[in-house]
Amino acid sequence: MESGVEMEIVIIGGGICGLATALALHRKGIRSLVLEKSETLRPTGAALIVLTNGWCALDQLGVGTTLRRTAIQIERGKLVLLSENDEPKEIPFGVCEEFRCVRRRDLLEAMADCLPVGTIRFGCQVVSVEIDSKTLNPLLQLSDGSTLHAKVVIGCDGVNSIVANMVGLKSTKRFSTCATRGLTNYPNGHEFGRDFVMISKDKVQVGIIAVNDQLVYWFITRLWTSRDSKVSRDSTLIRQSAMESMKGFPIDAIEMISKCELNSLHLADLRYRPLWDLVLSNFRKGTMTVAGDAMHATGPFLAQGGSASIEDAVVLGRCLAQKIMKIDKNVVRVETLVKEAFDNYVKERKMRILWLSLHTYLIGKKLDTKSFIVNSIIISIMAILFKDPDVHCRYDCGEL
Ligand SMILES: Cc1cc2nc3c(=O)[nH]c(=O)nc-3n(C[C@H](O)[C@H](O)[C@H](O)COP(=O)(O)OP(=O)(O)OC[C@H]3O[C@@H](n4cnc5c(N)ncnc54)[C@H](O)[C@@H]3O)c2cc1C
Image 1 (cartoon, helix red, strand yellow):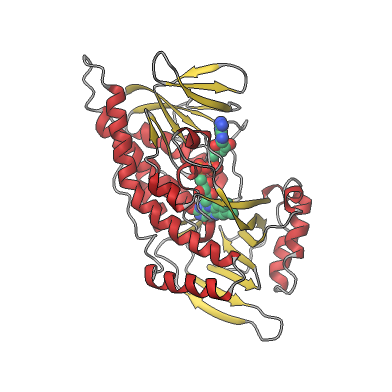
Image 2 (cartoon, protein in one colour):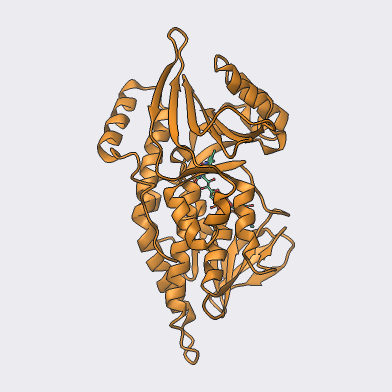
C-alpha cells in the first residue's frame, strides 16, 4: 500500500460498487468515507454469479482468494426446455473459465472487513447533492437534516441514483420482466452438483446454481404483473407467487422454492439505462462521478452488472491514484487532477459498458416481445454482434 493521501472523498452507497471503490482507494492509500442508508450491510438479492472477469477484478482488490473458499466452481451448463405437448429437451452448454456463485453477504463482508474502521457510515441517507456556490465543491444534504461538504463525490447509489441525475443522466427504464431470487439450504447436501441449470417454459425462466455443497441460489424471471408491487413487500407472498409461476416445472425445482430461506427472498422489476443516455453522457460534473448501477444499470441476463461494478472500482481507483500521486503539496490543483482522473476513468469504461448494455438490452427486449418479427431481428443482431458467448467474461480490467 502506498503512503496515506488526505482527500475528502465521499462515496454514496455501500453496496457492491461503493465498498469495492472504497477498497480500491484504500489499497492505493487513499482515504474515503462511504455513506450507506441501511443500518447494516445490505445483501439484497441473495447471491450473484461472478464470472472470470469479475474474479480478475476481485483479485485486484485482494479479496478473490477469500471469496473462492466460499463458492464452488461451476463446471457446465444445461438448458432444459419445457413445453405442454412435447418431452423436455436438454441442451448442454459450456460455461466460462471461472464461474462461481457468491452469497452477496460474503462478498460485502469480505470487502468491508478489509476497510479501515470508520470508513462506512451506516444509517446515513443522502437526500440531495448540490454544488456549493462558495466553494464550488459538492454539498450533501443528509436525511437527519445535517449537511456534509466533500471535495469529491462518487455516486455508487444504484439504479435510482441521485448522483446520476446530478451528472446529467436520465432516470432508468423498466423491462417488462421481473426477477425473484432466493437461497435454499440443504443441510444433508443437494443434488444439483456443479451444473448451472436453466429451465425455460413459455415466458418463465428458472436458474439454479450451487453456492456450495449445501446451499443453492436460484432465480426466476417472468413478466411483471400489477400485483407485484404488493407481492414484493412480503416474503411469504413472494414465495407463493414464485410457486405459482412454476406450474409444470420439475418437482425438485418446485420443492427448492417451497423450502427456501424466507429472509433471502427478493422480487424486483428489472431496470436499465437507455443506450443513448450512456453514449451521450460524460458521467461527470465537476468532481462528481458515478459507478456501478448508478452509471450503467443493465438487466441481469448476462450476470455481469456486479462484476462490471467491481471493474469500475478498480479502474476508478487506478485513475485517481495515478493523478493524486502527482499532487504538488504547494500548488493546490486537487480539483483539476480529480476531474482529469474521472475523465480517464470514463474514457476507459465507456466502450465496455456500452457493449454490456447493448447485449443485455437485446436479451431483455427479446424476453419482453411477443412479436415473432422483433424476436427474429433481435436473434439476428445478436448472432452477428455477440457470436462469442465468452466475450464479456474474457475482459480484463487491468492492475489496480
Ligand atoms: C435479479 C438480478 C440478478 C442479478 N444477478 C447478477 C449476477 O448474477 N451477477 C452480477 O454480476 N450481477 C448481477 N446483478 C446486478 C448486480 O446486482 C448489480 O449490478 C450490483 O448490485 C450493482 O451494485 P451497486 O453497488 O452499483 O448498486 P446496489 O447494489 O444497488 O447498491 C447501492 C447501495 O447504495 C445505497 N444507497 C442508495 N441510495 C442511497 C442514498 N441516497 N444514500 C445512501 N445510500 C444509498 C443502497 O442502500 C445500496 O446499499 C443482478 C441484478 C438483478 C436485479
